[in-house]
Length: 363
Image (cartoon, rainbow, N blue to C red; front, side, top):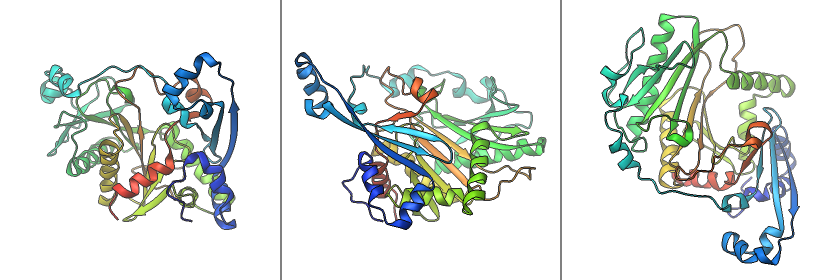
């Protein structure tokens, strides 16, 4: 199905209603969507402020909320475009000046101010590894970028960071064959959880079981396949594609998640850790930075274990998930009680995001 370019996620319930029978079944196999209307009566004394903030009083009297739930993974989101217009306190911030101010921090002198892993360091043209001094797990390292500014990344650098992480995981696994569950994460700036501004990613290799969110996804995918005789990740892609939220480039599936963990979540799916996948990672990040104005993000890599395991990983692809963590100049946190204990509340539009990505990622 080709979705009109002016449609938004606020019309997702209507888009789904218009799908043909096969596409509707493909969508319903993964997602449940519904809409609600919230009514309110603002006093006359608020009208001037409402017009200044939202543009029109009538637009806030009846608010449409679209609720989307991934019924396989039970990830859910509530969309209301008005959330993006809420009054938020901001404070100007100069990242270049702050990076200059933080000279002589540990990552500026890796070999003297950071520890190394027992199997040594991995060094490449654009980065070098260190052992994390406050570990999440037994094997927990850092990929420290030689380019200090975390947003000045190139295609070659993104390839290098990911390749270095893989090399680190291989060395860790060789030193401990029972450690086989690899995880790569990049928290860019403090909004995303980074404690230091200097660009860096983290790498982990676990034993016994993959990390909880990845293990939960594996189990949900296997249960889905048992019930539907279809690979879950194929179904996930198709459910997005039929409503205009997914497309493919050079064997890599690009999905603007309809049930995002937060704003502008993109899922990249590939059969292996290929150069094509690394290219799409770079192009997605460049789209975030250059077209969407995203300065702070989380990026994670999911993949099957490095060696055979008792549990089945059949059909589990390589996945990269990237999510916008909001404006670094704001005090308002993007996670609250709703996100932690109920459902995500999101103002960005996955259908618009998919169109931006189509334009940004060369065919």
